[in-house]
Amino acid sequence: LPTHLTPLLNRAGELPADGWFHLVKNGDHPLSLKTREGFRRIVQRLDEKGCAAIVVDFRNRLGADPAFRVLVDFDHFSHDPGKSSEAAGWITAMENRADGIWFQADWSDAGRAAILNHRYRSISPAWRPSDCEQVAPGIYRPLRLRDAGLTNKPNLQGLTPFWNRESDPQPSNKQHKDIMNLQAIALALGLPETADEAAIIQAIKALTQGAAQTAPLQNRLTELEKKHGALLAESVTRELDANADVIPEAQKDAWRNRLENDFSGTAELLRGLKRTAPEKKPPVHDAAKAAAGAATKTRNSWAVKQACFFGIHYISKLSTFGDFIHAATGAVRTGAFTAIFSGA
Image (tube, rainbow, N blue to C red; front, side, top):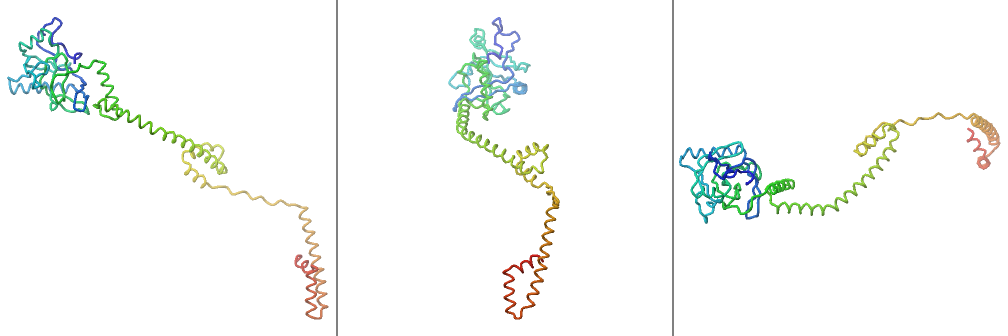
């Protein structure tokens, strides 16, 4: 990464006097990899743990074999069988510092000349997929350095299936931000942050089509919700009116809220409340009506007595049963028996 690494030459155009060069800048480095399915974005995490592991691994191998060196070639040509594997130099020492990994190298004549003559400006490390551990989906931490290469397009090589030189320009700061924005969009869509642009576009299209298909259903749902609200309001009003005898006026709004939130349960509760029996009013005494009734009763009693006297006297004069029947029939017709029984 050109903005992350220190150039091989100092401002005077010479190699640094102490012979130390910047190999790895610590931090997260996004990388776009070309695969059979298209470009895939990953993040290479070169944190304290990763940088320390790389340096420790180098020192362990150097301790096991004092002749051990790490190759520095030209443009990672040694990764391509069709290219030259000529060495620009050999890494002989490595340190983990606050800003990343630094190294010393034994430069070849070709390598030294390439640097001093300004044919190459930077160096790029490389590691195999097996040299990295996965920290999170799409994020990998290198733990061992495979080799490095002089290049004018430094690119932290990680988890790539082929090791030839990078053909695309290194992303600028704006491109770096765009990559990070795409990762955020991918996560928001429920995709892994390593999803490529095609997958992101496809997910957005699916959401758009789904929204178009659900719009009529959403409109219908809104309409039904409005109707339900109106019906509920009418039902609540009716229930309040029906139970006005057990709902104090001061509690009417509280009962309205309960009915709106749980109509069935609250309505059942209201119907179960104890109601006061209606008060029975005593009959009103009407003196005039009572006097008239008494007079009528007196008249009926007198009429009954007269009818009884007349009937007994008359019946006693009958000599035969036929005469009795005839007299009784006449009494019914004239109303004498009616008067007798109605006044008893």
